[in-house]
Length: 144
Image (cartoon, rainbow, N blue to C red):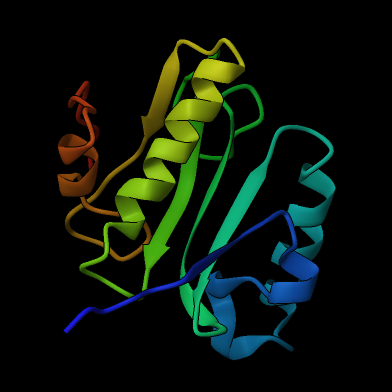
């Protein structure tokens, strides 16, 4: 039996499609602040790509130039992934989003793509998917 899957890509439409970071608290001040900040940052270098499957959230990635990134990493000349989240696993969606970021880095003439990972918390992704996509471990920091 053939299984067909249609994944829809939406770029920088956070107001229309919502921000999945705080999806369950859309009226919370933090959600509203994140939404407003994200829209403002689109004029700088921020990219926010959402994937939807059957009109439901399937995942997203958010990244910006290293000079504009809010992660605690020195990455001038790079793109920095702020966040990646995948709800529908087993379809390679995370890798597709990461590869899109890498392609944007190439197109923009960047040195590469950086990301902060952490296996001990929920605020940053683990390193496995990035290692699978050609990233390499560069440095450790205190507190995981």
